[in-house]
Length: 182
Image (cartoon, rainbow, N blue to C red; front, side):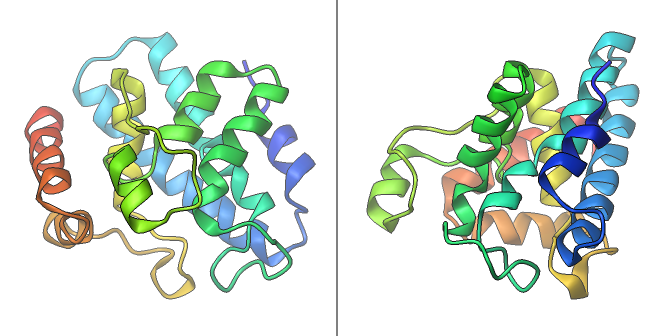
């Protein structure tokens, strides 16, 4: 088993504002992901991985300027996915790193990275395994914005959040909704 709190505490000080936002967010995302995974009948090994990766999926936030919760970061917020992947690879967790790198919304297309000028290498970032998809799905429903931290988005709100990035993203959301039975 991965001691995810040991890793979290290594990168985010437990007495920081960031920690007080990070932990509730990842707990809520992880709980929703586990609920979906159990409903789909995933095995104990998959459930354990979802728990660990869910708790670590946003660890890269420790390296970026994050909304109103971390001002000292210099990297753009979007880079929390690549920074999180880097951290988790350095911690010897390549499968968990894939979740960190691919969990944003329903994914990000390389051509959108280029056209929108996102501060990421121009490649596709999409969940591929069932566990990655479930964690990405669960993450859509919870924000790290202070005013939204404890509130789960409705299906309609979540879809609207994804659809603002384009119809192809909304289509993936709709496919996942059917797949995950929500």
